[in-house]
Amino acid sequence: MTVKLGISRLLEQPSEFVDDQRIGLICNQASVSPDFQHVADLMFNSKALKLTALFGPQHGIRGDVQDNMVETAHSVDPQTGLPVFSLYSETREPSAAMLNEVDALVFDLQDVGCRVYTFIYTMANAMRACANQGKRFIVCDRPNPIGGDLVEGALLEKGNESFVGQFPIPMRHGLTVGELAELFNREYGIGCDLSVVKMEGWARASGYEATGCSWVLPSPNIPTVDTAFVFPGTVYFEGTGISEGRGTTRPFEQVGAPYIDSEKLAAEMNRMNLEGVYFRPTVFLPTFQKHSGSPCGGVFLHVTDRRAFRPVLTGIAILSKILEMYSGKFAWKEPPYEYEYDRNPFDVIAGTTRLRQMIESGISAVDIAETWKEDESDFKRLRENYLLY
Image (cartoon, rainbow, N blue to C red; front, top):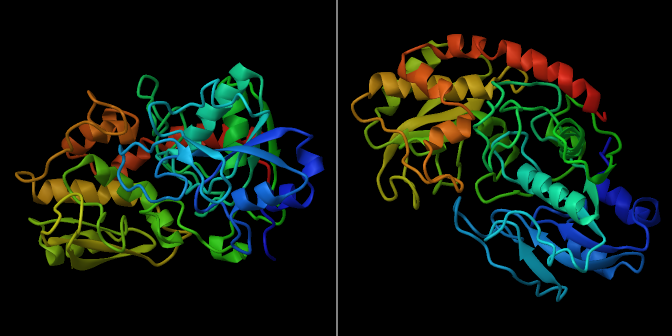
């Protein structure tokens, strides 16, 4: 069965979800209908909807901006002639001036299922602005591409909040954006006038391919669903001097550095017998970012069983093994990272300083994962209140 997206339901029956209101749309290049029509164009051309402004997240409204802190400018959309306000610019929250011609904000972005992804915090910031300005906020739900039943990782610790982690949720949260919006709004006190346009036909444990939806990359370095599955583990490498594969055609599926012997690392990783993954030795040449123009030895992650695969455990296991094998050459990344200028980037990603300290102390990845169990159980209980499917 093909899943009916939230945006499809809104476009088919706009009066059910939106009154005679001026609409602002938070969208990007992946905000498309099942027949690949951009949602902004469909809303603009609809006689039943009044689209007055567009809002773009990190990487821009067309997804063409690469880096983590290359801010995108406000502009005008050439297709509709509407103003485009960047929410990854001098502000990451819509201002009162931006919302002046808007009665309701509609959010239609594809998430990847990981805490460290700025789109869900663009959503939270926009919800906060709507609460302050008395505007409605409407989330058009889309599938969690890595599934909605599995949870993995420690909760973000209080005092470690950032633009890649505002709330105490685990690295792999297993929620849709609509469910996250409900959680953020009620559990963490945003308190906006929120509506979620639910999907029809989505099953929590189903793979993305089973939804009947086509994948459109939500950001430049999440080109495939396979990328999304490994991202909650290999995103940690953004906080190190090791390449996470940016500048190649398979970012996040391969990690490495010029000093790594790929055959030795792959052999060590496969000896761990981690479930659902095989580590193939590889050498890749980044065309930009870390080690640009230098061959990097490393491993390529082949996920052989998505249900058994534990990306967070796997990412920490690779990182720990590289530190063990190459302690004299391994380095943590220096700031800044995502508007954090004074904090260790790895700690920002991890949402805690404890994880780095445990890795540096030589505690095994399997033992580290045991420390997450209570957090995972607590979050599973909490999220039961917000499951929509």
